[in-house]
Image 1: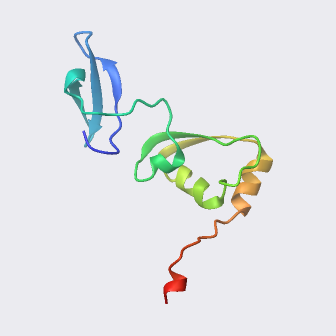
Image 2: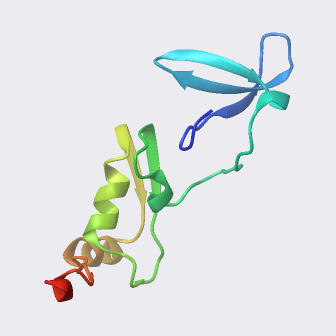
Length: 112
């Protein structure tokens, strides 16, 4: 198991709980006792999902405007989905999010 890997805890064919990972379209089963340190998650943040892909992604945006909401964040969320995306939000929030562009702030310009 490597950083960023995601899997499920399922019962195998004998009824034992084991970790299941999809690696190169093959199900790989791992005994729970052999799992390295890991985090359990029922959902993950958009930031944590960067670099990952999923068949179906559900994105839940807050019902009120937040400073962190911008089109780049929404783009990151949408592009995690290989096939399907479900977007749960109100129309006003998604419109405002799409219209808000993240302004990058770095200290690099002052160095040159």
